[in-house]
Length: 146
Image 1 (cartoon, rainbow, N blue to C red):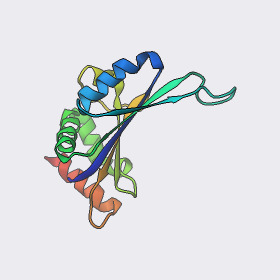
Image 2: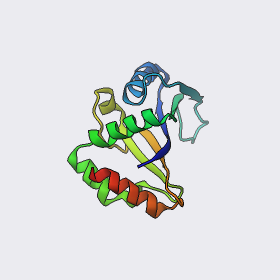
Image 3: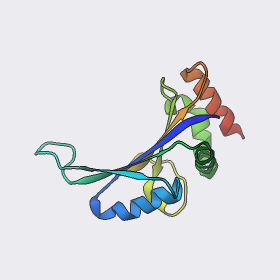
């Protein structure tokens, strides 16, 4: 499966930033540059009631992309791999983006576990010609069979 790029995003309180940066670099790419953005608390009634830090990392080099893709997909347990295979349409959008959410806590321990609550967001831009969701899903499933 060919990937154009991988975009990783994670959120945390400012005091946890150092630990999350270390986790992202260990999980994704040690030499990658991580962009940081502070999200200020919203006024009463807003979603964010405390200051958050958004950390974003983009992987564009093909060697790193292949290494990360294999690390993530091969690191999943049999249940999560099976779930991805069976429900691939839910993880790929019409723009050929493949989305995963990984547990921050487990990633910090070196484990790859799918998680919906407070995750590390990964977006893989799948190369498919011509670009279509169906071809992207087929490509993902073929890669998961390996």
